[in-house]
Image (cartoon, rainbow, N blue to C red):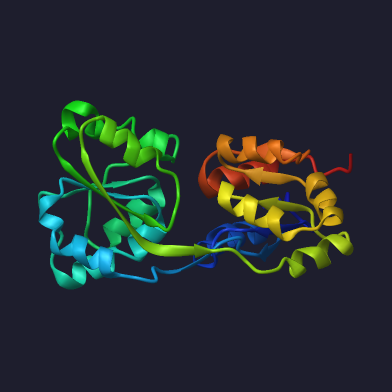
Length: 258
């Protein structure tokens, strides 16, 4: 088996609970993964909104899980109270969420097949105006986040309720990355969210920002790539979606010095 990442130290910035699969693939190709989450995930500080939504869950036609974290921090609470309502259709943004739902017995969740974002979810036939007008939709998500999905469904006549079932917290320092940059041991970063990229930039001083801008940064979505270029990052590689796309791009990258 070829080892296209042999000797390369590559930073995986996914939340800790979601980083191991990508890290393991990097290691399998000879690389040395460094897990440095740019977002830490924890339960919502107040679970009252989730408990209130669970009490009324039969009134919803669609339940949209915006991430695997949304599944992990809401579905166990739902199933602890009752079985999944047969008339409630689950919708997920990505295949990881679909797999988590199925593992808990919620099968046949709808999800996009190519892109994995709010825009792609809004293209699903089941979320068009004729299908959602007058219906109640529950969106399970983290604190904050984009409003595109909720706004788009409201424009189509749906009654939308959003519940924050987990919270995202940025790291407080970037010392592990600073040490790698100082020792010229950081070959690349993989960044899977715009929020995570902003968190990283906020942690760095002017000198270290120069190092970041010269480091290859692999991102799986055009929106993250656009932000990276706005922040003057010079070596932004837009990959295919999810871990598969990131690994393919890492494996194909020309690692010779510029």
